[in-house]
Structures are given as structure tokens and as C-alpha cells.
Length: 459
Image (cartoon, rainbow, N blue to C red; front, top):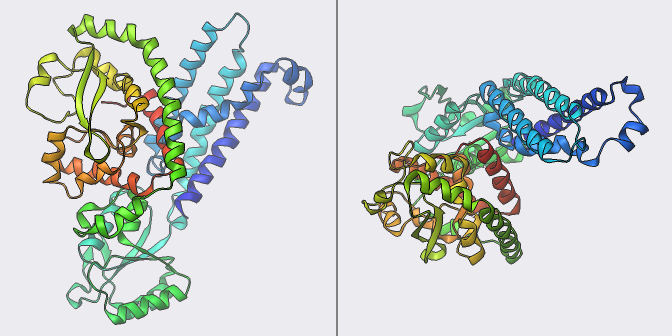
């Protein structure tokens, strides 16, 4: 079963559960048998917003459409617990701020409780049924070298496994019978067709980085003619992890393929800029409303200044001045350039709260209005840090092909990069975004950012 199909099943199930919970809420609200929930209750007492509660629940719970999270019971429980708590707090806030007797208590309360219970049951049913081996696509990996071994390790490391790997095909006789990451090397090209028929293979993954031998090429053509889906290792790596495998790509990859793939149409650029302006105006308004409270908290905790500015690299390496609320001690900015790490001792008490809630990022909406940043894009870095990292991480400067963003694909998928290896992983996410960016992906990132903010997952 393909990832898109799994997400569609999750969405359909969540909507079904949501409207079942809504019905239960209406029954409790009407305090009568469900057959009598009709005109008098629905037309005269129930406001239209009540019927959109399931969509609001899905919006807050958008993080749980990431398939690796959705397949784990512990993540599912934490996700449902979080959305239940956030929904309750938000409604309590609206209830006490609204005029007396203008908002229902029983209907919404029962909806939240019912949706939590039903969602927990439904999501556990999904884990039990749709992540079982019977629903996995059976694959063969052609090539047991570095690329194939890396991919096998990726698949083995994802729990539960996203694919049922039967084994490797490799023409090197020295590898015959070897077991790599728990998967056997089953033979050379001559075994590919018989194994496909015998093992009911649905996919073949090409993981050969060198020139393909004529015998293997002919066999792969025959495989394609049988309707078996053939994909490349980099494409499958991107598919499984949402990252580009930078350490397995050739040095001329940027010029040979990435630049062309990273080009987008003018309509997308225009629409993105319009959305940036709208988002920038809304964000700036929110910043002005919260500014007195945040400024007071920062000043009481660690004095002035309240606002922090710093030169960063933007589109095409042009420098601009980023604006944020200060979250670190004043003297820390005079030290040698260093990346921020988890539980960094330089962060103040108020700064830790601001980072957790991402409120420190609010002034960057001014950068968005200026056109120096976008709502969505790679994280902006200092010129000195970019110069240091581009010598250690391949293709690092390719991040500068787009505007930096307040949020981004790397930010919602990975925390702070404390090491060069972590920086490489974040770059893989950034390059994936640059390569695949479109309005749908931007919207997904923004929705997942909401889940990150309400879950206080910032650092």
C-alpha cells in the first residue's frame, strides 16, 4: 500500500470518527434520543461552527499524518492526548471570553471526550491492520553496494518497517549468500525474474551507482514489461525519509539535475509572495499585540535590549538583518560564532519559554514583509557559519537558492543541529524542500508548524 493511500485512509477514518463524536455531542446537547435530534435543536440552537469541529481537530492533529508517527502506539497516544488538551484549553478560553450563555458546554465537551476515545480506538485499529506485513509492498533491492546497503539500513531502522524487503540482487559472486542488515543477497541478474514470480514482488529498487551491466539492463527491461514498478535508490530514500541523500550523490549532482528540478513556475512564486504578504501582515499585527507583554518579561528577566538583530544570508547569498526577540544572555552574542544546541546554557529563563512556543520568531514577520524572508524556507544562517559548514557538508550552499523561512521542512522534521552530521541531515531536508516545493508542501509545513507551536516543541 502506497503512502498516499495510507494518508487517505487515516484522513477518512479521522473524519468518520469526528462526525461520530459530533453526533454523540449533539445527543448529549439535546438530552434526548438521537431520533429526536432534528429541526428544533439543529436549526435553532446549534450554530454553524459546531459542524466544523472535526476539521479543527484534524488541523491541530496534523502532525499525526506523518506515517512513521501514525504507525507507533506511543506517538499516537501522545498526539491524541496533546490535541485533546489543546482543544479543551482553547475552548475554555473562548467560552470565558464570549458573552454569557452564547456558547455550549455539554455539546463541545462531549465531542472532545468522544473524539479522543474514538480516535484512540481507530488509530490503534489502523496500526494493527494497515501496518501489518500483509499490506506492505514486497521489494527487491538491485545492488548490494554502498547505496543499497544504506537504503536497507534506512528501511530496517524505520519501525514498523515501511516495506517488506525480500533481499538483494547483485552480480558480484563474492556477495552471494551474504546477509546485509538482515536481508540476504539472493543472486545475480539471472535470479531477478524467477524471484519476482516466486516471491510476488511488487517493486524493484535500483541501487547501482556504477554503470549497469548489459545483462542486468536487459533483465530490468523485462521486469518493467511485466508491470513491476522500478524506482531508484535516491527516489526511494526521498520517499521514505523526505530527505535528499547528499552523501550518496556525485559531486556534479547540483549542476546535472538539482538546478533544473529546483526551478518553479512564475505562478507559484507570485502566489507564494502574495501569501507571504498576507501572512506577514497578520503576523506583524500579532507581534504588535504581544510586544508589550513579551518585552516586559524579557526586560524583567535579563534586562535590555528586548530585540535581537543579526546579519544572515538570504536568497543568492545576499546579507540582510534578521529581527527576533532576544532569548540569550547579552554577553553570549560577543562570543565566537557557534550553533545553538539543545538545553544551551546561554538561553535565559524567559528565552526558553519563547523558544518553546516559537514566540521569539514573531518579529521576523517584518523580514517577510520586506521580502527578505518567506513564511516557508530553509533556516537563515550567519555568513561565517555557512562558510564553515560548506567545507564539511556537501552541497551546503545550495540552501541559498531560495529565500530563508520562518518555518521550513527541516524545522518541522528535525531539531537543532548540534553536530556536522546533524547539519547534514537538516540539509537533506532543506534540499528536499527546494527540489519539491509547491503550494501543497508549503501548506503542509505551515499546518505542521501549528502542531509544533501548540505542542511547545521548539528549542
